[in-house]
Amino acid sequence: TSTPVNVTVTGAAGQIGYALLFRIAAGQLLGPDVPVRLRLLEIPQAVKAAEGTAMELDDCAFPLLAGIDITDDLKTAFDGANIALLVGARPRTKGMERGDLLEANGGIFKPQGEAINAHAADDIKVLVVGNPANTNALIARSHAPDVPADRFTAMTRLDHNRALAQLSKKAGVSVSDIKKMTIWGNHSATQYPDIFHAEINGRSAAEVVNDQEWLENDFIPTVAKRGAAIIEARGASSAASAASAAIDHVHTWVNGTPEGDWTSMAVVSDGSYGVPEGLVSSFPVTCANGRWEIVRGLEIDDFSRGRIDASVAELSEEREAVRGLGLI
Ligand code: NAI
Image 1 (tube, protein in one colour):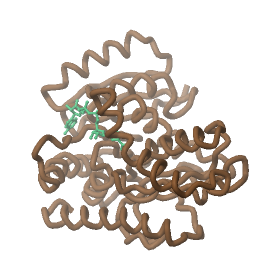
Image 2: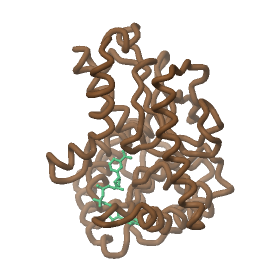
Image 3: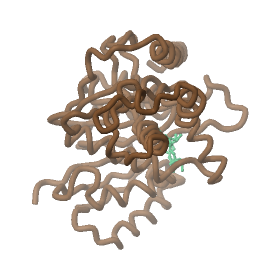
C-alpha cells in the first residue's frame, strides 16, 4: 500500500477519456500494485459529463483507485501531478486554417504548461495526445522552464502499434514476433513508419517482406492515413486504440522497454538524426528507470532520409508558425 500516484487527465469527458480512465483505474497504466488518484480536467460545460464518468468509475469498485477529483481549474488539476495525460484539445473544424488551429491550441497548452511548471510534482511526466500533438507538446514545454525538457513527450505510439499490426498481417506473424519498429517525425500524414530497422524473429523485417512496392504504396500510406480511415468507417475518430496507445506509452516510459527492443515516442530532439534541436519529433527510444533515450547510431538510407526530412520539415514549419503567433 504505497502512496497513490497522481494522474491528471485533461479532456476527461471526451471519447478518448472514456476509453482511458477505466484502464488507468484498473492498474494498467503503471502496474497492478500501484494505486492511483485521478484528477480530471474539463472545460466548465463538460464538468457534469466528467462527473458522470466518475460515478461509473466509482461503480467499478477498482481496488487501486484511491480517489477522483473533477475540476475546471488548472491549479487544482495539476497540483502534485506525477503523470499528466493532455488529451483535451481544440479539433480542426470545417474551414479552419492551420494558423487558427495552432492558435486555438496554444490557448490551451500554454496555460497548461504554466500550471504544470507551477504546481506539478518534481517527477512529473507529460504525454500530449491532443492534436497537433507534437507542437502542442512544444508549446506546453516552452512555458514550463523549470521542468526538465525530457518530461514532455507526444504520442506516436498509436502509429507505432498500427505499423506493428499492418506488418504482422503482411508477414503472417504475431505482433510479438516483431521488434524495433520505428515511427519518425510528426504525428500526421507525413510521419514515416520505418521497417528497415525492424526485426521479425531476429531477421530484418524489410528483407523478410522484400516488397518495396507494398512498403511505399500500401504500408506507409495505410499507417499514415489510418486515422482518416477510422473516421470514415466508424463515423468518429479513433478512441479506444488511442487510449490503449496512451497506456502503452506511459507504461513503457515508467517500466522500461524490454531488452532487445525499443518503442516510438515524440521527444525533444537533441539534434540526433539531423532533426533540429528542440523540435518534438518521434524517434526510436529505449526506456529505463523512468527515462527515455534516443537509440543511437542507426544507419539511415536515402529512402528513409527523404521521408524523415519531409516530416521534420513539417514540424519546423509548425514551430515557425507558433513562434510567429507568439505562442513559444
Ligand atoms: P473529444 O472531442 O471527444 O474530447 C475532447 C475533450 O477535451 C472534450 O470533452 C472537451 O470538452 C475537452 N477539452 C477541450 N478543451 C479543453 C481544455 N482546455 N481543458 C480540458 N479539457 C478540454 O476528442 P477525443 O476523441 O477524445 O480526442 C482528443 C484529442 O486527441 C483530439 O485532439 C484528437 O485529435 C487527439 N488524438 C490524438 C491521437 C494521437 O495518436 N496522438 C489519436 C487520436 C486522437
